Length: 482
Image (cartoon, rainbow, N blue to C red; front, side, top):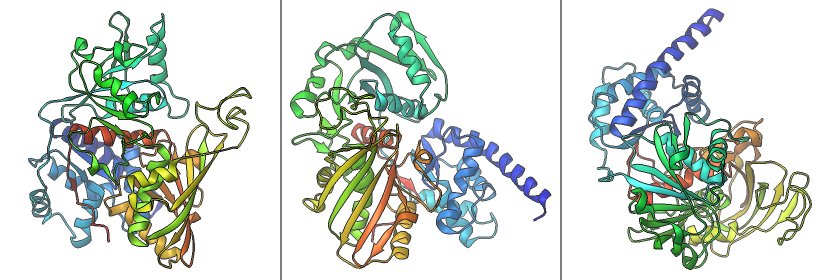
């Protein structure tokens, strides 16, 4: 192409993307159809983000998929009577244009695809959600729920419970939601209603309830019923402690955003979310590290068999550590988090067995806290039941990230230049760094990046949806694991 043709092509792609945005929004707001492009949600995506999402096809499959390929499919889908579902427009376009040269058979192709859609199970009425705590995870879950809110999305963030109540508290909370040093500014509008202790966030009325204990809360007094209470404080991690939430009027179920103790089910969405029963009232979403490594370990165990292994976590510092040297009850955690690498323990390796019993007793683990505010890495040194070589292993992980049932949890990168800050905002539980993969005989070492805040919060959202009874089919259906 000539230099002028590159610019013309880019401008046409921009025009296509600008045409796509309102169609994507209309399908979501009116029908509950969530459009994705190679696993990447594009609700409220900018024109540039839409264009960037199309590049994934070339990275993963070597096949060029552009807006000129996806726009005709999207325009046709907008005219269909679709049930609530998730449609991967990128993968759908790949399937169609692989076998066709024009749009002549597009309607027939899409009608067949839609006809094969299983019945979704949308909720009969909106489901109330309450956040108990408003720290790092609480604020990111808020952002995600507001992003998804609309007539087609049945979960409603109704209230947030916090301690305090002093003058200026609500404005401070609003400011922390509005601005984030790691994740950037909030995408939208936040209004403060001091008189009613509420925030109106992109039109969503969120009641702030000030209480020091679950027993002090009456959700029904605020019109909240049968709510899922998301405890992101970590104050209670066993059945006895978390059951206190269920004594509050209007609370029906509890989701803990930390590893649960005792008999609490630790759920890694994508791996064992089907273990959530309708009558379960208390569930744990496990930890960020457990969510990052378990999907990859499941894929590896299913394909190659994991005989044993060690997981070393290189983890960003957290609020549990001291900024400067000071007393801390935990070993080494009293030393300045921003100045030191700190060896500490992690229960993530053992916690994997709660979500993936096949690996019980096969893994050890340790952790190093490092002076970065977000994004971590798990290094999985695995002994396999079969020999493996690097190229075929990476090809398997790439396919797993693209088309398997774990595609929503595992991402894959071929970049030789990627560093931790590039993973900020990743919506995946973990990102396999293929360029760092080592394979030798029956042994391999995998490097898995993860945004321990945002990626984990996305997994929490999936758990809330499943607890609430949301079951949406995915098109095209993921390939069954081999």
